[in-house]
Image (cartoon, one colour):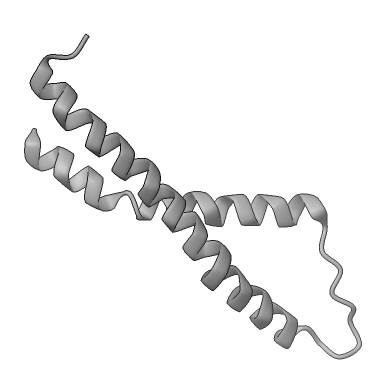
Length: 84
């Protein structure tokens, strides 16, 4: 349902958007989460065992993934706004 000009613009934007989202998730996984969990392990008091709830852990990690994935989408959003 798109014109030829729109198809030429949509495919590179779609590929770029998906790849940037995955790059944002990889950035969060390899750089942000290890430093966050290292910090949390350091500030845990000596007498307290750090026992995380799996639901809270998954919620936290998914929110971080979505936040960084969406923040890496900013260049695509700016290109779309300029084209509008």
